[in-house]
Image (cartoon, rainbow, N blue to C red; front, side, top):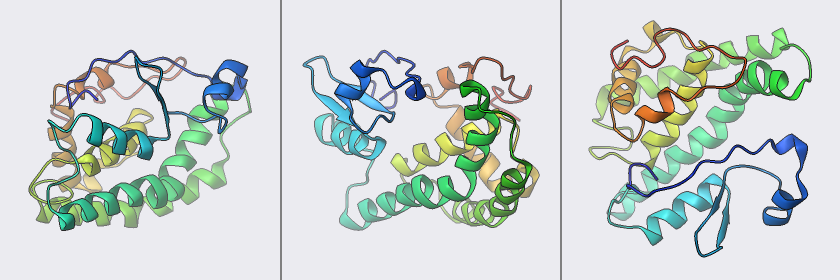
Length: 203
């Protein structure tokens, strides 16, 4: 929404509290959830992104040709499916969600699985960034923002060894420099302190 220059008000929803008002809007009980000024409720990140692309097409983020749009969708699905399952969710659930919801300490075996899975997955992303200007090709797209969202979460809790993926680091530095991305770098989660370099554009 920031890249498309759309004004919005972010609202924190503690999904584990299962507020009746929230469940009424989204029976799935998950975030993100977009509520338009006209009352239209749009659930799920994929549905939201497709909706925004159709409703606010002045700044396209899906590519222009069929082949480009396929590649963008493939990468978004890879990050939000495979990469999330193998890497992001393991770290975020263990290091963040457990703390916020009071469900105990991180499970070391789950974190070890996450570290093992991160190596080949970062190697794949590094190959993309070595051979393309942006992840899906020569154009900035939703694939870049999907990837940056996952990597930002992992970077916030200090779980990325950037020396293993220098091309990804350079690409991510460009993403961090975008005006729409900078506000995210000053956002904080209660009780968790990110590494000193987290908000630096040159790291």
